[in-house]
Length: 433
Ligand SMILES: *[C@@H]1O[C@H](CO)[C@@H](O)[C@H](O)[C@H]1NC(C)=O
Image 1 (tube, rainbow, N blue to C red):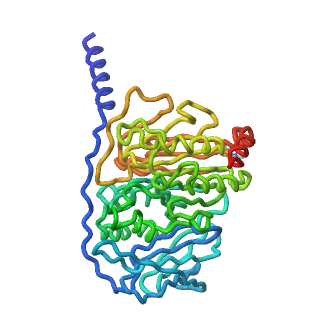
Image 2 (image 1 turned 90 degrees about the vertical axis):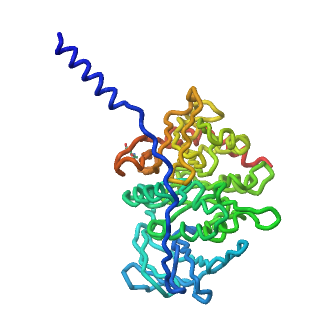
């Protein structure tokens, strides 16, 4: 009798212990970057991005203004049998003067191939791998990165996973007007961003406008040039690209989005060109989430959502990834606030490690559409296995990289018949003036 009681008590206590409230980590401090002088013609802050079919844009900065915007590359170390010359830019921001920012597009490149390259005929050799031509392809996803101890932890975790392309739904450096912080951010991400393409879209921390003095997005646009020209857009704030059977649309939460805006018109035009036979998967990234049950930034995405969700739904977008809220949340397939088997899965992944800390407070009760929400730092991985199946997982920084705190198989809207079912409706919307 007594033993039974003790045993029961023991079981009860251990159960209580294992389900004890998870202690949320505190924000970590902004990293210190010791001054690390390099020869002025040596490349700094090297990062790469996809630039149209089989091409890659290499971006780097030199202090030396006479340094050439030349990239030499090849498939063996030191064997640079190809080369290309690109363009350069620079900008001033109050008393700050940027270095020479080089953007050089190289290619055509082979798929799924390691290339070795050198920037400006100087300095160390870098290497990257191009994405595969077909499935499977893996994306690493982390928004709201910043440059704190948690950022470093997120980048370390991502560095341990096997992936092809990094997706960043806004808020990169948290420079917040301190322009040298863009430079330290560039150095911090270089080990990853020089090795795999980083495809980013803007967040509110990229704006940095000062009324009458500084236009918005000057530093961001100068430093993080994305393939907007290659995708028929007239702004670096929204663009699209194809990679291995997926079409990705990067929207601008801070560009005009009403029905008469350039962005809206571009989006319609872009959607009209999507061929789901060629790219069965359709993804959207943007900064401000449309589906968010966190108290933080509540309702901020409503305006854009009201205008663009009908289009995203009609186009059978499979997955929408957002940042902004410093936490993780995943929805079921949803449209217009209601569960819908032909709607997108919405994921907020603004938990990359910024200095502002986590967004802990959630609205209760949890809405029907919200199936998983947690305020922890982490990153996501999306492995598109084939035209019908993709595997999504979310990895907390507090765990070892292989631990998946949330995971889900997603079946494509092509395979569920939604794309075919809605094709006429989509055509009608796209044809309307
Ligand atoms: C796609 O991948 C899933 C998951 O691995 C598998 O079950 C399915 O059979 C695959 N489909 C095709 C057409 O290969």
